[in-house]
Amino acid sequence: MVVDQEYPTVCARVHALARGGAFGYGRAMAKAKQPPKGGAMDPEVAATVRESYPKLRRFFAKKVGPAEVQDLAQDTLLTFLEKDRATMDDPRRFLFGIARNKLLQHFDRRRPGKTFDSQVMSVRQLSTTLGTKLDRSTRIVEGMRGLPLEWQMALELRYGEGMKINELAAAVDKSPAQVKRYIRSGLDQLRETLGEDAQAVDDEALAAKLGAEYRES
Image (cartoon, rainbow, N blue to C red):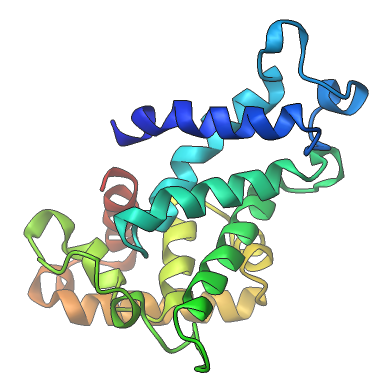
């Protein structure tokens, strides 16, 4: 798998920064100014990398080109590791909040002098390197790329990552009511895009299919 191939590179980058004292994360790192004996990565940090990197990679892979996915995922992870997890009331919300901010900053840099409105513009309008073929196995994922970015993220985090509405709202810095509107509008537009294949299924079934394709693709 691609994630397994990239994992050593990610760990090496994290480990290099840990040796430089970049992190306030983890009890071992907080107590010592260097990694544990033998030069091994702190176990708590290693576990976080292993758990979080695949989630970040699939989050970005639905929105940017292949060459940009790894860098954005790594940058998000490194920013997350710089924080003290003991001060986080919800680490997963915090992680995806950072990921969202990195993504918005990325698109802002690609449009110098122009405003990027994530409530209106879709990643398909911004990325020329994303695939456009709508084969049957990935039509939902491709359909979501045509949604306004905020709608896309709301659907993916709600049904792909299983986040609750309040947790999701905090991650994307919106009210729960606004997030519910994004989800409702996203499902309606996705159903219209998919046509007859989606007309015969209810929201629960469509959401389940969306979540499965998000995690698998």
